[in-house]
Length: 73
Image 1 (tube, one colour):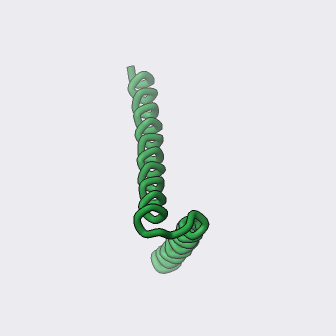
Image 2 (tube, helix red, strand yellow):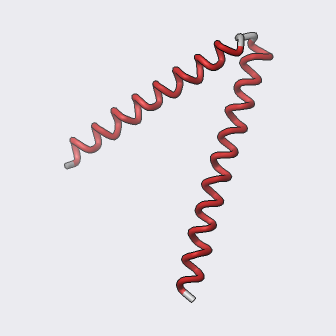
Image 3 (cartoon, helix red, strand yellow):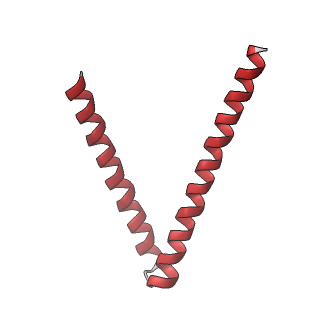
């Protein structure tokens, strides 16, 4: 009975993760549409905004993980 529970727990976790990725994808699509249609930024400008946001968030996450790793160990 434990094996069945673990199987369904992992399946539920995987499906929840896929759902979160899909919701993130739809949010990015909505933001892209808003930037190109309402704000008037060209498509390449919207892609540049998302590229810079990706680089900036990676930089912040890297700095935070490095700071937490060196200060607490």
